[in-house]
Amino acid sequence: MIIGVTGFYGSGKDTLANHLEGQGFEHHSLSDEVRKEVLKNNLNLTRENQIEIANQIRKTKGSDYFAKKVIEKIEKNKTVITSIRNEQELLELRKLDNFILINTVAPVRERFDRIKKRKRYGDPKTLEELKKKEKQEQSNNPSNQQLHIITKSADIIINNNGTLKDLENKIDKFLRDWEPKLSKKNKPIEWDTYFMGIALLSAKRSKDPNTQVGACIINQEKKIIGIGYNGFPRGCPDDKLPWAREAENKNDTKYPYVVHAEANAILNSTRELKNSKIYVALFPCNECAKLIIQSGMQEVIYLDDKYNGDDAHKASIKLLKMAGIKIRKLENKTNKIELNFENGLD
Image 1 (tube, rainbow, N blue to C red):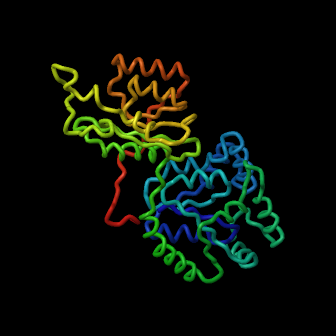
Image 2: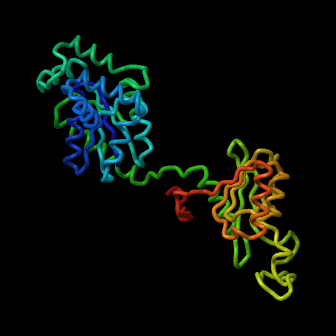
Image 3: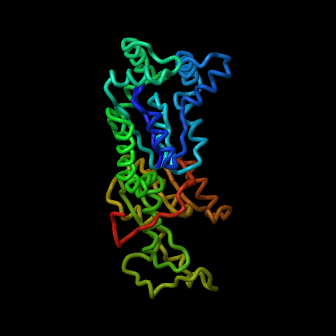
């Protein structure tokens, strides 16, 4: 569970983060990274200097720079991150699994009273100065402070308009409500993983005892328009033809009879295949490459090319490249996808 905390001056961000630290959370602040940069430039740690240096670095090194620096330091699954003030910082943090953003809010006069009591260096001295400073942190410049965008993007709002104990109780309730939800929440699989997964699942329909291959064709709208797996032609019984890979007579092997997954996916489709993509576990042979080219496909995505170096493999690559078809080996980040038929909602 990774909790981002945002809010205006005196809203209770650090108080919330400190309470979470007491619950075993690791605390990182983007402002700590900003302060390091200010000191590198031999400047005083005023809020104005921090804002100026932060804006300069976002402009030169990317608006997500400080978020990336903090992400590098995360060591625990339970982490709280404060001082999120730029939209790109938030977008970078949202790439983390189980990230949730909290906005702490309180009436401006109540926040000003807290600011006066804490007596922090550089804090506004008057209510008007507070309002002016907060307005400066609501820029539409993508390199600057964009606190108005961040606060409106929060997943949860905690109203800190009571006592410290009230705030702590609200935080504890949030943890009770959300930790179970986030522990079950999984990041959606990527499109490549999804479509290759469909290809691999369809391969399970193949009766080939040695090599089960599946293929999945999608159009430009990411809609599946063809699925197939390797097997004998329709109407040809599996027990009447050989599955052997080797024999003295080639006609006693599977090769003269089997229809490859790519061919079946193409033949099973009733849609226009022009500019489509095909996902297949095994790199296509030269015969399937011809069908792919003639179908007007634009890309082949594969997992394995175990026949690399064979004449048919070389011919396939030559044909696909000549036809201008993109070839891509899937560098997958997911090793396994589990299907639960007992409870499909888990």
